[in-house]
Image (cartoon, rainbow, N blue to C red; front, side, top):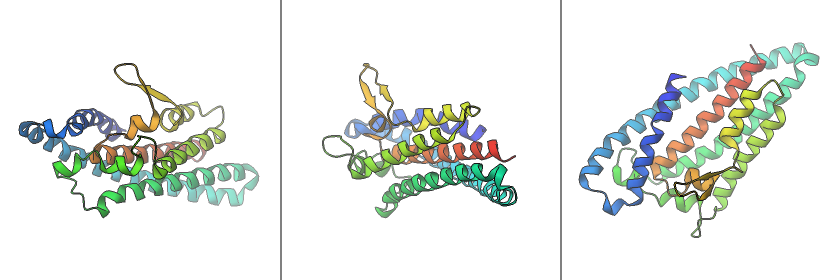
Length: 226
């Protein structure tokens, strides 16, 4: 999990990057020059985690195939586990597919991943996920509902011996939690994760979410198929 550790270290960089992006007219040329290498680093990290996600997905696919085989030969022992596995695969694919559609918005609009001006734009994804009153748009609400459905369904599936998975699920996918800013003001899950983020900040969060999805499924499959 070394790669995952490196990835989360880079989230701190995003805080500085988004602070500058939100006040872009006041950012000095020197600061822009200093941020450009950070954009490069984030994009390189995104490539690494895309590969990590794909590797996990291949292992998960193999585990699912193994579970399908043994559940066919021993349905009384593995039939219920297969039903659980199928549910998690279904909701993971559903949420992951919607995330891909959101990511494709930047591709459709020809964003250059290494262009400072483009990647520091905080209005692009805000206008997709929120309305003018900073409430969730239809697509923002759809994303929230899919994340919460994943959280709810997985908690229903997990048993008492899978407490670490339950903790991971609660920590990453519970959209009902709130956070506090530096002044102690409460911020809801979606605003905290996505409101006023730059393009690269939003893409990094969405890819972090995809990595968390596949990490959960990876450890779940490991818990039922050795």
